[in-house]
Every structure is written in C-alpha cells, then in structure tokens.
Length: 148
Image (cartoon, rainbow, N blue to C red; front, top):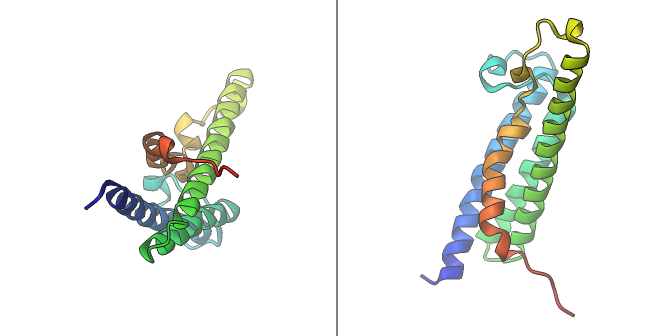
C-alpha cells in the first residue's frame, strides 16, 4: 500500500469518526434545546442550545461529505475535510474566547458569579475541537495551493 493511499485512508477514517461525533453532539444539543431530557447534559457538558447544536450538525455534515467523497475514491473529499477542520477550529476558538470573557467578567463582578465555575463554560465545540486541532497540526503540510 503506497503512502498517499494510507494517508487518505487515515483521513477518511478520521472524517467519519469526527462527523459522527459532531452529529451526535449536535443532535443532543438540539434535543436539550427542545426540552427533551437526554440525561447527558451534566456528563458531557451539553447545554440546551439549538443554534449551537445546528452548528455542530453543519460541521459534522461537512466532515461526512469529505468522508463520502474519499470513500468513493475522489480526492476532492480532502477539501471538505480541511474546510470542516477550519470551521471546527474557528468554533473552538470562539467558545474559548467566550469562556475567557466570562472568566474575566467573573473577576470584575464577582458578586454576579458566586455559583459560577469555569467548567460551566466547557462546551462540546471545545473538546471536539481538540482531536481536530491535533489532526490539523499533523497534516498541516498536506495543505497545498493551486498554482496557475
């Protein structure tokens, strides 16, 4: 098995696993937002957030399209995987910045944050982004530009 085919298989498996994770967590977010008690909110740090769940579903769908095209033997599926990685990392950064802002606010107005803990800011968009960040750093040399 040549090296490029093995790398594409690794990326294909990664895309499938990450897409499933994003879709499952997106569905849980939406279910909680609609008032359906899944019993997973505390264990997985999932909030009742319909828009956040929809965002996770979109990211999962992008990864799934990448998997589907790679599985069909089309190298264009790599672009879907790379775009999914970028979107995932952007959402991860946004959630981290929101958490940092809330943490700073808790220092400025401590009386408003008596029962608040930093763990309250942990969202699936953050911890699902960690394997994506690791993959991004591992495969960063595979990004190429088209030369005309």
